[in-house]
Each structure stands twice: as structure tokens, then as C-alpha cells.
Image (cartoon, rainbow, N blue to C red; front, side, top):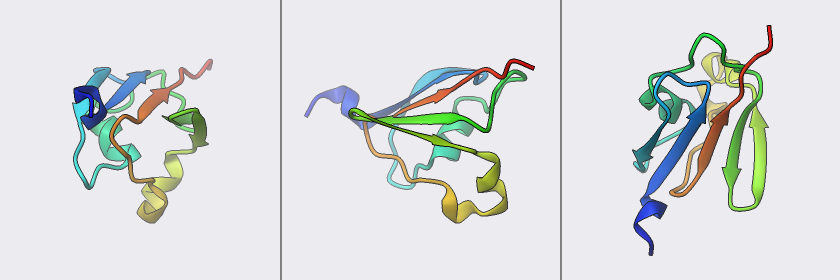
Length: 86
């Protein structure tokens, strides 16, 4: 197993884009929070989770209302927060 597979990469419109050490209880929102949270320009409605060749888009605002919707991450996942244009 390569060392980078024990990390989750968070990039885009977060305050501190980073490679975060994976933990068993890590979710999409906890990974974003570990990267300093959303910056002022983040589009929280279209956060992308990339796993292998698959990409899913989530509206993270829904997780605050219902935390059970917050997907669990796996080592090697990539989270991309797009910028909002307005």
C-alpha cells in the first residue's frame, strides 16, 4: 500500500487546502473542517467527492440539517470545493 492512500486531499475553496491524515470516522464535512472550513467564495451546493474514477456532487448544506447524509470518506478520496460565481 502506498503512503498517500492513508490521506484525504481537500482542495478548492477552503481556507487551508491540504492533505489530511485519514481517520476511520472521517466524513466529507469533517475533512472540509480540518482544512479550515469553507472560504468566503465556496459553493457549498456542489462539493465534489472523487473516489477512483467516480465523482459525486453533494450539497453540504443538507448535512447540517441531517448529519446522517454526510458521506464517510475512504483513504485516497479527494474533495474539491468549487468557487461560487456570485
